[in-house]
Image (cartoon, rainbow, N blue to C red; front, top):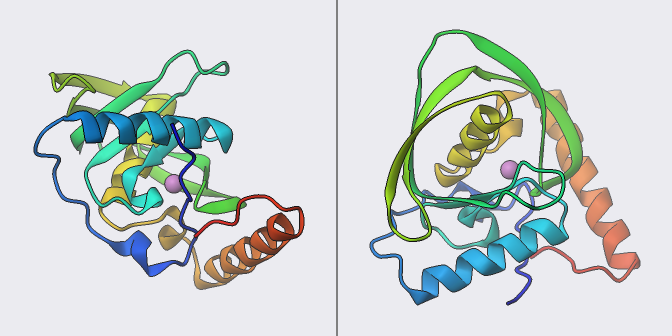
Length: 176
Ligand code: NI
């Protein structure tokens, strides 16, 4: 297992469109393990492969408080079920220590493969709906700050710069 460097906003590699996973082989399974380790170490609840500079359609997530509910979404398709939208305060491991409200459809359907290559369908609302839409955006090269005003995007950029500097001083891993 290995900790993977997480790309930081506004790294242009975060704009890459992810390709479908063709086969859930050992290489993908190792990447899944590494992504979970990286996500838990960074105290995140979701991580898209795009964020660790691997441009394939793979998302890991754990919405529990104690790391007990790891979820894997491979080649996910997410479709809004209702026109209703809700606002949640979102954060992102690629935009460290920056949080802002984003409006998204409240209910979606998810079709994806799990880590064993089995397809599943699921209706999602609440945190799961928010998180899967946020992570899907990463696979499409979209970051949640894209929904914000120019002013807030500038604030996000400044915040990330500051955090990276601080972490470098503290001797933490500097994101690539
Ligand atoms: Ni994110």
